[in-house]
Image (cartoon, rainbow, N blue to C red; front, side, top):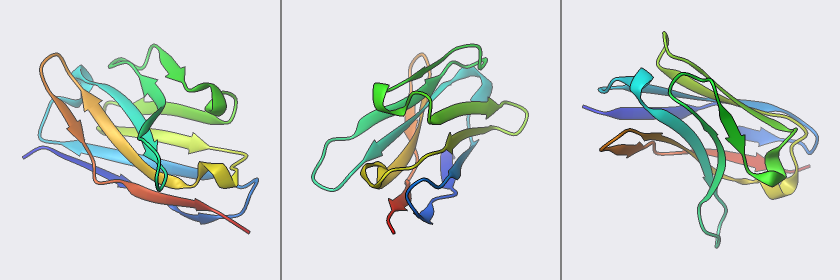
Length: 116
């Protein structure tokens, strides 16, 4: 059974940091590119960051560059998103996505709220 389980979300003040984790099971994690997406209320889901299967290449949405860092540990079947200098506009549900040659999977999401 394929599972992507996100964790690490919560309430944080503006300027604070959070580290999200997404742990995978049920498929060959090291063969899949991984991404983080987010969706704020009333808005479309948007790509936050992407990392290749080996971790050798990463990409970020422009508004996240310099503040967010995506990484992965293939030995632990886990992808991370380090989020620094958080802003109220970063408030959203954050989702983990795995994309392989033929299949793609989604997690259930973890809520991030940035508020004073």
